[in-house]
Image 1 (cartoon, rainbow, N blue to C red):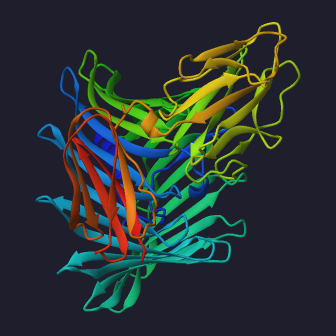
Image 2: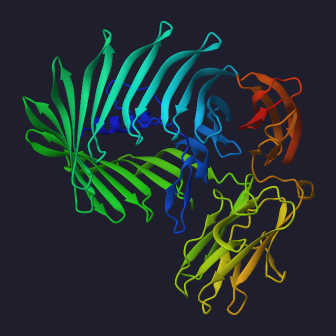
Image 3: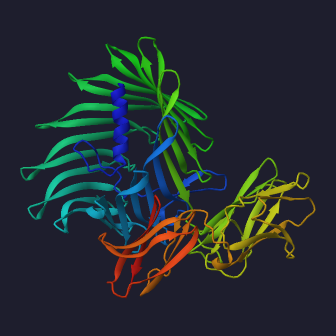
Length: 607
């Protein structure tokens, strides 16, 4: 594969994630709205992708920077906001200009009671004002499967139809037909259509692409798919319509080993009624790596073109993605670029560093960082260890939690390990949990009880991040009789000695904000309370340092409604009351700017 082909492939992969419109040659992509993928981990630390109603770890922001020779310089970031039901409500894109973050664009998501967005809007920031660009309205069937996307653009101070995508599914949820229409002359006009066929094993075997011309559907492309005994894809053939029949154009062949790992990808082109080799990928595997050697067919033989080397961690997460190209002069592989990835404890990617090879050493080029959060008021990880084996227990508070078991927020512990191996569990109402989340509104002491077991000879150790607790409260580790062992904010570990009680308690004693030193750990704009509200609501925020602050209210059209505060404030927690007596009922946004930092939240005014 030529280098330009590799780079084109990478670019197309990036564009496919950007929400761009369909082109004539691209088959139907995943029709679901692209939201940040939240994740959690199971008991063994393996990353699981969860449905939107069950996600616990959420993307808060991502940040892009470039290497300036001696330091990283920011240039783009996106900040994500969620509602009380943990649904994405806004993604604000900002550019770092003149030493501050400047608003660039934003997407707003609206919901009709479900976990899936009913409306998505795109706005761009021009001359200090938000201006509407387009919106997509989603419709779903009773199974939550998308059946229509209606796209409108903003023109002459109104939303105007632009295009729509229709999805026709069978009773099993399989897509049978996709159609895209355009709005022309105040009516919907056919434009593009795909029909899909399946075999008796429900395997996708054919897609036919058609375009609307001269009041009829005309065939354009045909894609045929074949499968092996184990259900693996073995062949795909692309055909073009030539007046009255389908003619072969290109095909891909797939070969697998006994473990169903792809070992060869072969790309061929149809010339003079014969399949001719074009491109080949050979794949080799080890336990924690994969090597892909790419070759081009040149003058009846295979010639090296590029090589990918991918390393994984023990959970299957990609650590390093390195591209090398073949140097025909030295007849050897030469480094070209590499990506290095890192992850947090939940398995979410938190950093990607892109480096280029300058001929003698790797040079940083670009970096993207992601920040994830459980969206709890707080969430703490308690690590229980006997020196060899560790168990992680999560506990915390959440706005929508109760003090009993909550199906989404709490998690049952797995079966107990064999006797003698370390084990630890939180208990709620006599049950055992690996995650125990309580009501955020609790003002009386809250008790988490830990029952544990293990090798009495080696002793057992608990460790935690003593900086990860909320400011407004005291946390003590106690014995069941109430004897205080230690202050968990002062210490970060405890060693349990043989012969002591195998039950301990964590006690959280709530303290009002006014009794706590008013110093914030980070910049935060809190959800207003109550929300929805009528006619007043309280907006609170937290500042890590003193500086200029501006709190502004906008309506759903991006027009400024009011400025609630514009001045200088000290570090700490602040709040203001907003009254909407003179406003219409509906959705409003409040934006907090402090220095170069900006955050936005949504509120709903009901009459």
